[in-house]
Image 1 (cartoon, rainbow, N blue to C red):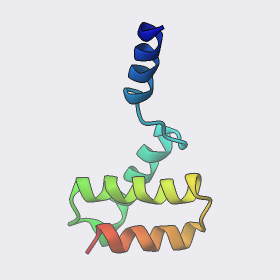
Image 2: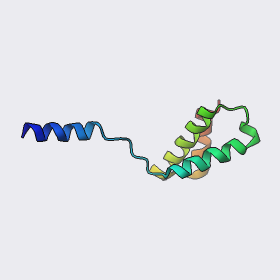
Image 3: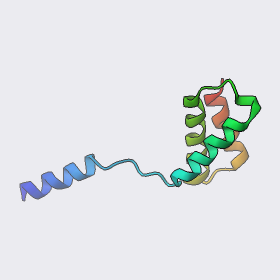
Image 4: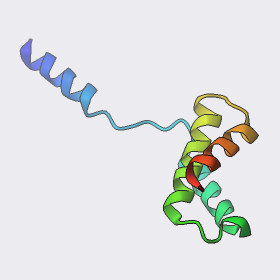
Length: 78
């Protein structure tokens, strides 16, 4: 019984993060953002964080696309 409890605890603690949006959407967002001349001097890391933030708000929290993009841009591009 202790072994079963331990195994369940390990499975719960070591569960990888699940993303609601497909990884290809993240890559599409990054590619699209890189083509935008307004963000040509922005680091790759900031673009990735922006896209992750926006997709999480849009897909996971069902927020408006425009508002989500604006909120994430303020966080990652300043």
